[in-house]
Image 1 (spheres, rainbow, N blue to C red):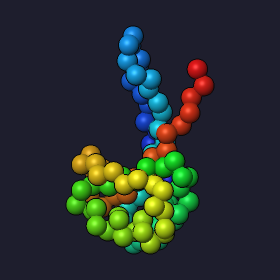
Image 2: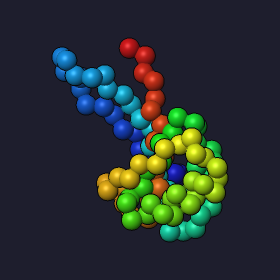
Image 3: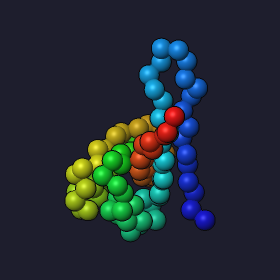
Length: 94
């Protein structure tokens, strides 16, 4: 089974901006490029790609390789080195 992370918002308080829920999937880039390329290729257009700052060059190369210039790249020191994360914000009915 593949690991899936669901990021839940903090409870809303009066006057705070509306929170959202995001679906995040992470894959290792150390086992080869097939899985990271597949993850980026299959991601929806609203997806955001995240990686550790030390992996920026390789992730930019992978993003360009699959032609997904519609997915913004975010450098996030909380993403483990060697990992690629793709997040999609989910709409929540209130």
